[in-house]
Image 1 (cartoon, one colour):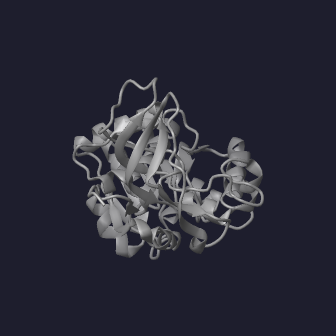
Image 2 (cartoon, helix red, strand yellow; image 1 turned 135 degrees about the horizontal axis):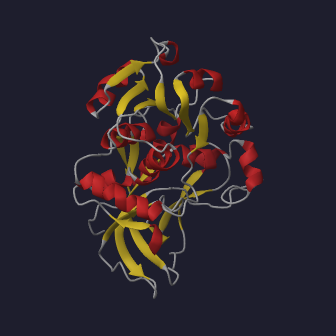
Length: 334
């Protein structure tokens, strides 16, 4: 099969299209023919090998070279083959998943427990925009943020992949939502349900005096003290991401937040879906919300398979609204 292989750490040019062996599913795995994938910060952080501290943490990064060579944390496609212990899927089923790697190839093996059926009202490209970003937003709001109906939720970074899902999910849970983004994205954030939109280039949302019950901190560009100023006493600050750096960030900011949390008037937690055991079940939950019309993926642009390096480069620039997706196979025979 064909796949974009990460030769070494570096720029998008290190992604090389090669012929690689077809993966073989284990007893509890499903072989998926990838119809579409998406590109996100998780991919280019691994591509760059940054922050450098992550290389010391082992799989999927390595000290001198990446341990996992085929990136792509989201997939949507069709079941090609199932392992002997798989009971819920059969060849031809339309599915989506967050395998954390492998999406930049034509086929990938995914454990049955991490799969979910693709929403019927989404194309493969739209479905590929969902897994990691929507799972992260769901984890941040429901599990880590303990959101309740009627609460005031501030989503800082509301126009990106995770942010667009966070705004919609918070509204689905019955919250009042304020989205923070640039002025050019204000109409988009308002259109997906935000009750109020703040242009961070003109207004500091933390200096307005308004307090919120829950802050979903995706942008990560504010000091911890400033973020906590935007919360009611006993509110919750959920750290999702932040500006990257070569050596430590955003890991350093997260570590600092957790270290100072016992001395703050709010609760500070993190949301990281990588390694979460509930990703498959959460995708099934998201499928229901999508089919009910409460959540929809926002796709900025769609690239062809051979344009994956260009798609990664565009996503790394940080200007995308919603998700950047890639059509791996359009369903036509060669």
